[in-house]
Length: 104
Image (tube, rainbow, N blue to C red; front, side, top):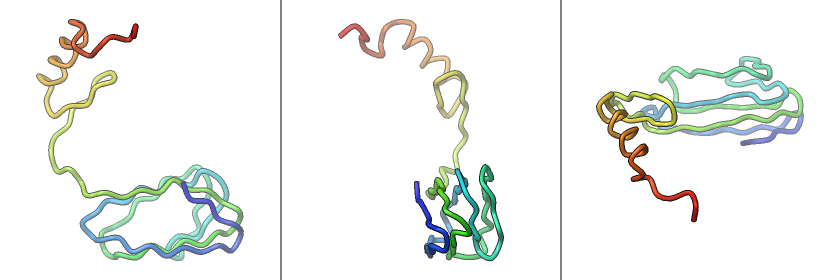
């Protein structure tokens, strides 16, 4: 999480190959010349490597970036795997006690 005071600024350079996640938790910011209010998620095009953030008020954001996996994923319940078969195997392992013992 990153907190801003009114007028606080931050400039971040991120390689184009990475995906950016930005969620405004509270307050209002100017992000690359666009006003963004609380409870909004921001999507970025891959047309630049610099993100400029300016606090329009006191604000807080959740900010992250990473290289995309570029592989399939399947989620069901608490499990995330690459295939449905792997999900079923995870459930079988869980039901057969192969995930450890919670009564330690």
